[in-house]
Length: 275
Image 1: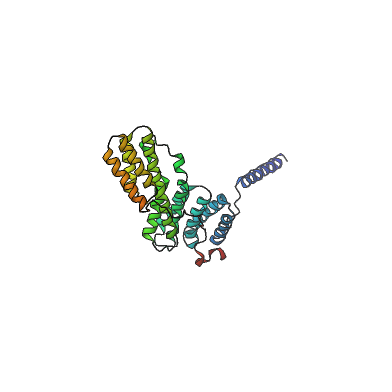
Image 2 (image 1 turned 120 degrees about the vertical axis):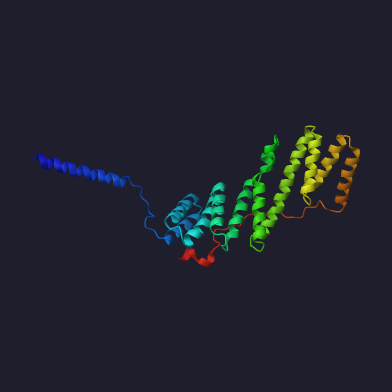
């Protein structure tokens, strides 16, 4: 009788331990889902602005089904999800990965454009954060990265549907970069570093022609030369300033870029969401 009782207790304990093991295992509703099901669920979460959940699902899709059209589209979608989820570094990394894996894909221009948009948004307001204390702070960082991303897109895919917007944003970024350099020149001028101020203003005139910053740069050059006692150079700077004003070269009629209408669905021809 004692042996039977012991056996029963042992079996109950084993059952309880087994149950704990089962309960301790994290439940995954997607277990056994096809690539189709994973992709469509991730796409719905992304469209619903549930970016974290969408990213989780895209990662599972890639891990379980690393090959095929769903994985390929998922690579592009996850970059967009990171962008919308305010994770710029991950968005850029995902876009770079897509470019590396699928360089001949007909929609790779989207990946280049997405990189530019991510960096463009990161660059907005960089002048407000710009405090020129040392040389390390002279690089506006993301603004230059965005300019280079858009330049690469335009160079490789001049007929892309994103090229026109990229060119417009490049003009805007170029103006911002010129203003950043001018900000440094003013900083030097205010502190009496006239040689440095003139040098930076001259850099703006030489490197950022046809930007609105050139007018202020020429004025600053004239002031700097005058304070340095170089009247001939000051007069020459004013002459160039007046000549360009009369020619109307300082008028900026380029509209600022509008809101980004970047969408997730760029591969409609595959009809992935309908399969």
